[in-house]
Amino acid sequence: MATKKFGIVLDAKKCLNCKACTVACKFENTIHPGEDDYRIWVTELELKGTYPNISQEYQPSQCQHCENTPCASVCPTKATYKSPEGVVLIDYDKCILCKACMTACPYDARYENVHLHAIDKCTFCYQRQPEGREPACVETCPTRVRVFGDLNDPESEASKLLARNHTYQLKPERNTRPRLHYIK
Image (cartoon, rainbow, N blue to C red; front, side):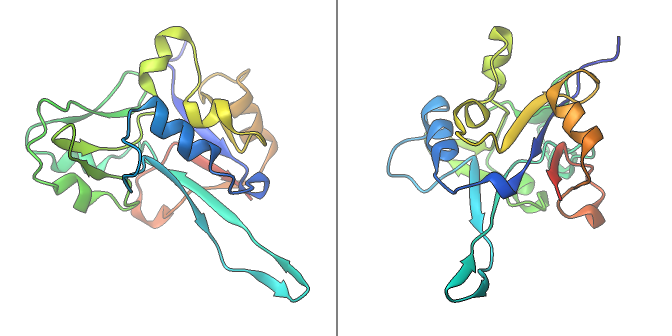
């Protein structure tokens, strides 16, 4: 059997911008209330249409857990590394706050966590994996925008969504090969 390859398939058309994902992420990962730091976020895209027929679209995003990781390749202490499933993680004890990874990330997905004294980012809630739980953002979304799974398992819901839909990845010109796939 192939090694697990974790990823997320997103259907942004389902996003209501309710903030359930960002709040769940903050609670799960002990990001202090009142701070503007986020591991995940939702961007409001341009309004479409003319009044009174206006619609708003959103683009949920986070660390893209790239296969080709520019953040890891520039880290002088090897604090950024990949799990066996390809999840990009940070060893906070090795991080020296040089911020090279922040500069190298084309998705602006990293921030300085003053409480950890290290750079931080989305980890797909890797700490939940031993229990077989999904990331908090996936688990809490009322409209199931994000679907998490093993992209190497053809029976996973994420793989089935990839097979049934046309998808795109953010900034393909950067050749990072993200593990987040957006349904067109």
